[in-house]
Length: 230
Image 1 (tube, rainbow, N blue to C red):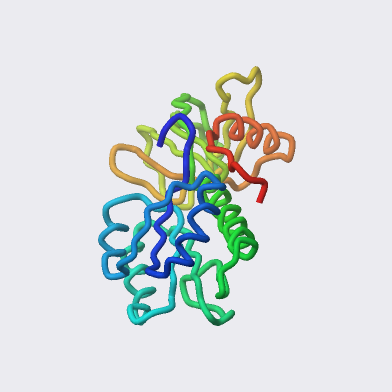
Image 2 (cartoon, rainbow, N blue to C red):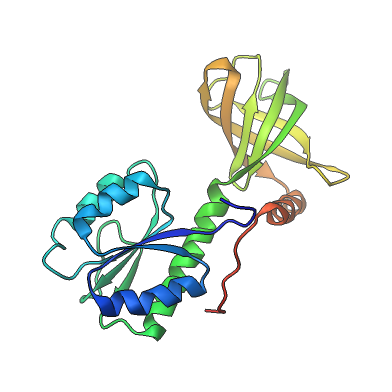
């Protein structure tokens, strides 16, 4: 990732028409693309790099079992999958289906849908470091000292010397770098790790504070903007 984050794509197809049509479309969305003409090598390429989007051509002699291989390779990380198919029906593990024959218009529409999903997924899972000590209140009105290590759209990361249990509720105010005030949040502990590390989801945040948080997060995101409007 550079100062501007660019999504990474693996395009799996041995059909020159599909490759030649999809490549400029993906480039137009500022998506960096690696073309794989040999489907049997797709799993190895997925294991070697972080891939946000997989465009996979399900036609041809190598198509049986190809989706199973891809899904097996993506167990730890769940990229968006766009499948080129002759039929317009649901395919397990596939998020977007692009019907053959592939045209610039249909390809652009499908990539736009996939791009929106990738943005949503990125925003959901991306956290930004804050490293701020705060005094939190638990559900028993007790107080504990915690450090908010990171924050994102879905929740926060914490460290503390106290013993936190999964399911515990905490309320506290946290300042955001560059803003004069603080936002009030209530979180639930989802998981804990040794050395006082915990991950939490938001339980309650006022609409006003949520708007402040979203604006602050948007100021932190750095995307390579699409070259086309889609």
